[in-house]
Length: 461
Length: 72
Image (tube, rainbow over all chains, first blue to last red):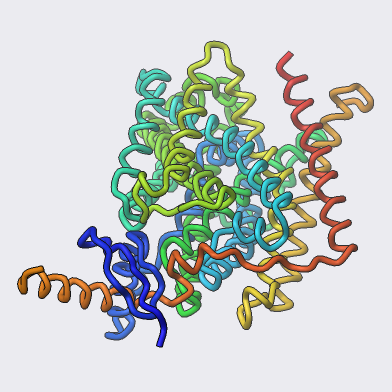
């Protein structure tokens, strides 16, 4: 017979003996409450209820990546090049994102551990900290861009940077206050659905649906210089797959309490997120394309209220308003998900509690990192004369350049039989995963090298 | 401890036990806090990872240099 362990009863707040079981924490109790609802729904064959309970991390990762800079990038693509090429290209990129994110979800559900801690423990501290360093750098830059997006949206309503900072930080504080993963996830999920505003903006510009359907033949191919094309590719890839999504979805799947039995629903969740994100992204592209016949006006005025204002002049006040609200939503949701990914990585790499189901007292590093990185990014946009436009435009490119290393470790984890058992990648998944890594790596590297050679005047622009 | 308190405690324990049976054993914080054993990477795999890491750092520096150059 095993020795009774003395544990603190989280509900009664006093120690009690538990025979043969593991120690129980507040986090376990909170997670098991969520799991009991999943078990109940599964046991009673309530399929829609089960789906409702298990969706979350996939949709949040995908719609979180439809963030301020991404929607601006899609709209800028539309304004400069029209619908051709990008309308079919965006779904292809989200199909790539699905392959990567499905692996994250599966590894999280099978191992119950986050990406950061698995890389650190399985492949060594150096690789774990490199990954966390990459993530912190790209997240900080991207978060600055999110605050810029909120600022651009608010500027349309004649509100300043101070309101953008207050709104972003208030949302972070509000969502962190519940002490439950479920509460955090549902609030952010509710906000994320307003990403559909970009689809509404697309409908309001009254596009020619025949032209939208006809653009699926990838023509016309974007013109301009080689470097511009590479920038477009790199920033559009960075608008669909990024390091934070990898950290976030694996850790959130583990925090949600997903198990191998939930992998099927995790795939539905990830696929739904990819489809919604592609549709809303195309919405932003179509809305932006309304500016095409006006010489792509408004892009240069991005630092002010350029895009919504330009759309308002060309397609009507309603389109400008909806687009501005969409930018505020996209920035706000991304601030929440990207801050969360930083918090997960910090807690996992330091080796302390890292869950929304833990209290701030028990998971100080997690909560401090979550709020801290948002605060830091907010402080940057308040610096007078800070190059916010350049930061926003380069955020996706930097993410694309740093992505291949994260993806390589993701594929390694998903193929680790010691961790994953029967849930390892199939050959086809590996083939697609490697192709994605090669494509992302080539586009990022080509842009980085070509831009650098131009900057030092070794090649002409 | 009074009989009422004892009964409350027992009821609470039953409630907790019913709750936690919905968690898989390796989902408990006590279990996930234990590190997984390190993997043995071959020399070729290590060399490949370092090559990719160095390449990515160089390209990142190029992007950052270009970004700073564009500011001027």
